[in-house]
Structure formats: structure tokens, C-alpha cells
Length: 287
Length: 292
Image 1 (spheres, each protein chain N blue to C red):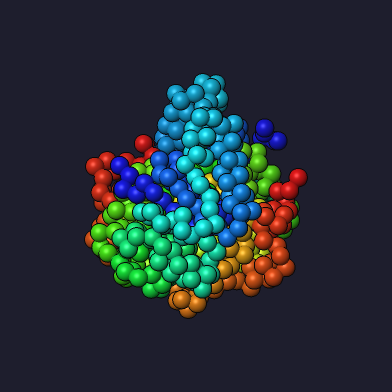
Image 2 (cartoon, rainbow over the protein chains, first blue to last red):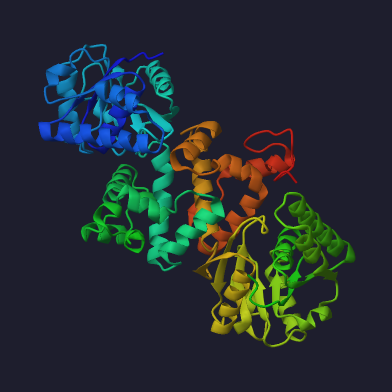
């Protein structure tokens, strides 16, 4: 049972496209808002390519692919969001950008429409103050790639109506995901646990505990992790991790979140992981 | 697979020692299992043979391989029987004085060319090696539990370890089919160095009400792809063992993230040690581990 059948996604980047696809797969009619037509087309073709890959791997049929794509409409006009029941914000991780857009969208959708943010680094309670009636605001934190990852964090802001997290959890289940209810604290739950571990690994690698490959191998074989921490960082993007852990550090002054000097240096040098072709393991993995 | 058949002695017939002895004999090395009493040795040998029998039943070893591995191992309570050893692997109780004394005694017995490997998880390889007058032949080799099933061995040289001893150790570990990672003589090597603060952090998140044991376990397995959530894992490891390892690492590193959170002390005080006592973070009807 889908409480929210008309869903808007703000932003058609990697996360926005993944969330739009997931909601459309779950049967929602999805409208994705972007700033220009080129970005709308890029996002649409990203979903198309993701689903084409699913066909190759036998996970999706061609009919399902066209049904899903038919349920996703891109737009650059905010007025197209007027009858939306649930708005999922997934634009760039900048407070000013998110707040301005949320305020504008809140003025367009119905007063009872639910608005959520997919932020991973900002305070949901702070973003909630950008919309009138902030009790209808919460966080819905998807992991990348959204269509594949099993877990969605449902974030209760200070202002959130106590009934809303349960409704969002039902929505997550209807999309086939496992909702985890979390507090609005830096990093919520998963990143709160993951960031100190990744920082710790980066520092130990800088301190020459072992090679990058041996650190990854030890944790994969010793603990059964699918990915070693340094491969994971290359996949996430060193700049993305640096931004997230710095935000958590700024919010808590907890040294566990402080970006290690090597991470800062690599980001400054443009060594960002897989996307830049060089990272902790990327060079070694490049054939 | 076997580069050369060696004579391997394993000191300590407990869980780790028996497991390491299985690894040695299964690879075709002549294996000697040592402990202080006949009873301990016999129990260790029984563990080894039971494991080998089960491997044959499960089809992991042929009947001939199982019989050869079983025939290739013997026990002793006399250190003098180690005189012909090429490799000595120490896996006794995690006590520095005991480990040092053993290596000191063995100096007189085993040939100068034999390599000494110590399976410590929390002590310094350098400190253990100082018990031998030839610390250059001592190498740290940290196996994961259960040793016969886990491929990983962390290898760490002490301050005085010689290149020949390190090479001989890597060669031996490859001959028994292990995956070797090379690290330094630092507390916790790689795996425990990162696992202990991770587990402590998860326990703190639970204490802080950031989630429930179920939601944190589900989030970690679902979002990070770990095979098991932190609380299921702690229940298997045992809260007392976690407390012991964490405390030893903290004592050496003095970094608060290694220190076990108060909840651990409360659980240990209450006897809620995990699966082995039927209650830890979760409760269990069946207290057996690994289907043993």
C-alpha cells in the first residue's frame, strides 16, 4: 500500500535519479525537478542506462524498463509539482541551496504535502525551518545506489510530527526497503559509525601500518566485509567523504570526525577515487 | 601445493593451537602438538581428529587426505621432542611472561635455523621475542578464529626480526594455503586495530539511543554489506573476550576509542557474555558456536 502515489524528487544527479527510479519501480508517478533541460535529459538517460544494465543481468524485463521510465517525468517548472504528496529533496549538499529551494517548493505544494530531505551531512531540523509547518518535514536518507541498497534511514527532526516517521517507514517498506528510524544527529546512524572508522583507516595507512591492498585484504578476509575501507573510500569519492566528515566534525568537535591530513591533501590534489582515476586503490586497480 | 614438508610444532593445545595444528597437518607437514599435561594434549588431538573426520564427511578432504593428516600429527608434553623442528608456532595463553619463558627454553632445544612464530593477538612481538636469545628468528603470525576455516594471517616482524625468518614464515604460510598480509608490530595489528573501536562505537551508539540492537545490526548489514551486525558478532566473540582485547589495546595505546564502554563491564558483571552463556545483546536457546 502506497500512501504517497505522486512523488516529486528535487535534483536529477546520481542520488536523485536513483531515488526517482526506486519510487517509480514501486509504482509512484514521479516528477523530477532540475534547473535546466540538459540535466533533466542526463538524469533520465542515467535511469535508462541503469535499467538497461538490469536487463542484461536478467533482473529487469524490457517491459518493466519502459513502464518505469514512463512513470518518471523530468521538468524545470516548479509549478509541475503542485499536486505532489511527497517531495524528496536530493540537490547538492549546500545549506543555502537546499533552504532556498525547499522554501520555494513548500509554497507550491499543498500545505499537507510531506517534504523530506535526502541530506547526509546537514541538520534535518535546521532544514525544516525553511518550510512553513515544519512538522510535515523529516529526513529520508537513501544510500547509493538507491535502487539496490536495502536500507533507508528515516530521520526524525526536532519538529517532525511523531506520526510521520512511521508513515515514511511504511513507504520505504512498500518500496521493498528496510527502514531504520534514526535521530537527527550528525551522520545519523550509518555514517556516524562509518566515518570514524574510515578516518581511522586513512590515518593508519598514512602511518604505514600496511599497504592499502593489505589493509583492505585483512578486513575483507578477517571480518567478511564485501569491500575494504580504502576501496570503499575510492568508490564514495574522497571529496564526498571529506565534506561529510568535516560537517560532522564542525557540528560535534569530536576528533573522530576530523578529516585526516592525508585525506585533505588528496582532495586538494584532485585525487578523489574512482571518478578521478586515482585514489587509495584506484591506480592499482586501473588496468 | 607443498613446497617442502617441514616439521612443525604447535605450542598450546587450546582452540587456537588445535586449529593451527589442523592447518599444519592438513597441508602435509609433520606436526607435533605440545601442551603441559597429557590431558590437554589428548583433548587437542581429539579436536584435530574430529575436525579432520568432519572435513572428510563434508567432502572437503578425501578419505586418504584425512587419514594422512590424522596420522601426521602427534602430541607431546616434553619440549625436548621439539629438537627436530623447522617451525615452532606458539599459541599458548595470552601472557607475556609465559610466552617469553617458552621461547627461552626452546633456544636450547631447537636448531638455530628453526623459525619461531607467535600467534599473539594483543601482545608485542618484540616483547615476546626478547624471551629468546635469538630474537631475530621470532615473527608474529596472527591467525583468525577458527584458524582452519579463516584464510587470513597477519604477519608482523618484531624490532629484531631477520629477513630470513620473515621469508621463511611467509613461505610456510603459503604452503598451508593462507593469505598473508604484512603489518607492523603495533597493538591489534590490522583487524583488531579497526574492529575494536568499531564495536565500541556501535555499543556507544546503542547506549546513546541512536538505534536498537536490531536496527543497528540491520542498518550495518543492509547498508554496509557486513556479514553480521556488530551485536550479533559481539555475542559470538563473547563480551568477556571483547573486554579483554579492548582493555589490552587501550593500555598500550591510551586512546579512549579502544576502551570498552561501560555497558560491556555491566554485561560481563551480569554474566551476559553472549552466545556461550545464552544471553548477550540477544538471548539464545542454543549456546553452541559454529554448529560444533
